[in-house]
Length: 83
Image 1 (cartoon, one colour):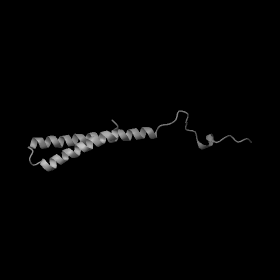
Image 2 (cartoon, rainbow, N blue to C red; image 1 turned 45 degrees about the vertical axis):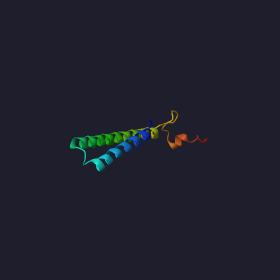
Image 3 (cartoon, rainbow, N blue to C red; image 1 turned 60 degrees about the vertical axis):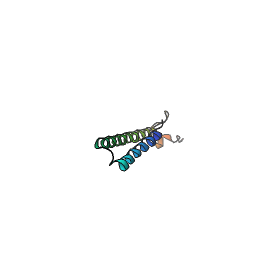
Image 4 (tube, rainbow, N blue to C red; image 1 turned 30 degrees about the horizontal axis):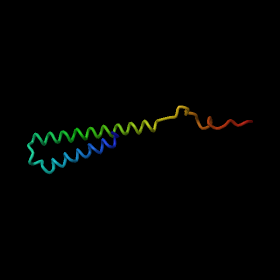
């Protein structure tokens, strides 16, 4: 799965769990409420990890250099002028 698809899936799951807590939370016993809250927090940590992985991927792509590209200055790239 692509990171965006994973993110969408887990965001949807997190929203469903929050909805359960908000609508049926008073009917659930305290243990179940804590389990749902813990699951929401685990999903949020996972989503932060996905964000971090995406940031690393973008950073790696931006730092990519062609093999023949060197750190030559502007004057080294200009053709030599004949005197």
